[in-house]
Image 1 (cartoon, chains in turn red, orange):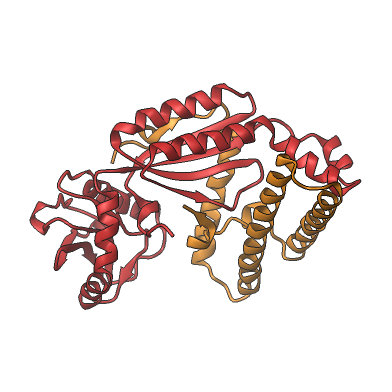
Image 2 (cartoon, one colour):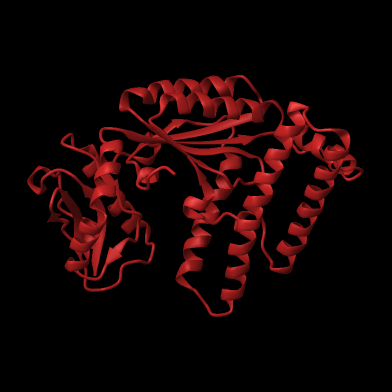
Length: 223
Length: 116
């Protein structure tokens, strides 16, 4: 089995390959035209999600992303192929798409943002909300409130700082925003400032911001 | 790789609301490993209800935007509200039937669940 870490567009000799990857195996390069896949070889199926495997995978991807010669399209944890031939075919078949995505993520980093509404749900809303369709919608609007508007505004401001943005549409209860932004490394501080500013403007808003990450959410093209 | 704490660019005023996702991740991983045959039906229900929940949320957001903008007449607002109320309570029933809670309806739907 061949474990895939990521796909790069710089020559194999320029890649910052770490000595050990998942399960201690040594990552190596598989070159096909302008693309290089970074892989390691394993006798057994490794897809069980052990924490140390995840960290090892992330470490290789981070090292590839940190190289200044080019970018990386990170493979999702657990991506594997049966044979080296299949790796070549993957790189050949999707060459144009991979090159286009690499051009986009090149030199950029991903920042993740999640915003939650704080404060207790107001039970009287729930009761009143059952009386009519109109009250139901108005109660939803009140519940979303100022924190919801601030989260929308934060998303607009961060989108303006980004080359691309991926927004997760499905939300958990109280979740107002979950998105990934592809930004220049120099813009990370501006993102931090926007997040802190939003949070300060309301007691009901909590924002978790993480990064910079390799561009995990930007491997697929925008639609 | 740097230490995990270095990856936090903004620590929220309250970290608790974010923590449920962490437990969910553990759960999802362990469930994936023990893919027992009797879990298959529940897994399918989880997938279908996650898609329905996504559509419900999108409809609700659209409705709220239109209510906020004030472009709907009273009768339409009432009708929309009743439809969404009925949909929400039907979702609650279905979640109960299949023994699912909100955290279970959190599958990664891939490109279907994302917006540029």
